[in-house]
Length: 63
Image: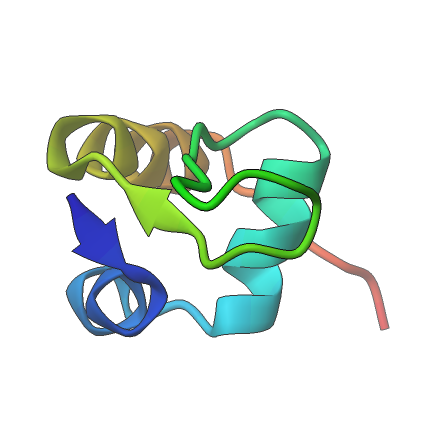
């Protein structure tokens, strides 16, 4: 399991993006302490799989 800091380092994405992906149900994460506000932990395989899906199908913003 990876902490948020480790997930940020591994993916290169900011913590805010990872949190939003968790909120949307796109990125699985666990909160061992339970509740809504506990620390997030990520499985390495699931995190890597999510990164591959995001890179294959990027959503681009228009300026």
